[in-house]
Image (cartoon, rainbow, N blue to C red; front, top):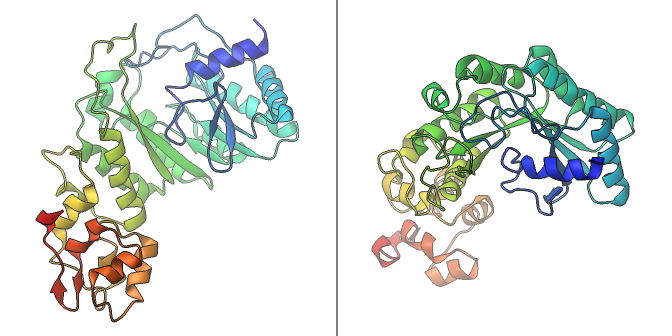
Length: 346
């Protein structure tokens, strides 16, 4: 099989493992963001690990690329203008050390070939501190999949990985490096609650300086032990991203987020609306209340919050509509000292 065919197969095999912006590879090699078109690919689809959700679990057969082949494939696609960045992950063929050595060798060759653009390297569970340091030196961003928020849940998915040692300890090592780092949760593969996921995300952001947390909805794949599992609600991942945004951008507390949940789970409703109904002492007065309170109003983000903070003499909701304030914000705002509408009206 030639390098191009192997590359297509490994890009397809990696679409469930590689998440950097919430989507799989389309077309087969690439995922577009605002600035970067990535070659998202596995170095090998063979894997000695036994993750119950994974198509490549305990697989001794499959396609692999040598580091030199990966470099040639990537440079070929760069020259064609098909990609301008690399996202590299891999199945763990024999052991973690050998896998990381091959991935680092591939990244080193890409750098030595003259490529100075974006590289994202996946760090394998149980990687050595040295390999994490090398990944940080070569890549613009590195990531280690958290997968689940607690040790008990990981035990349900794999007999090989140890949550405290292979994941949490390595994450602390990653946080010590001068490099952007991210992680990913698999939502719905176990009986975890959304609250436990958000609590873990909060710790990653606040304590370990994680740049982004991504959420990937569990998909029951054929020929895996979880093939007959129930699918998750389609909206669940989207609501987690909304709640994550409140943590990451608006510094919401977990105590406040939990008030928008039912038995620790998201509901299919804007979490900012649910939380505002519970935690705001009353409608916010833009003429006197601080910016930190104003941005807790549903429909009000940083831009609108700053605009309202600097406005005075607002006399009617029509003036707010003219400034782009949405209807869903009105029940939470006080104009000229009076409430404009009841929440039940919306």
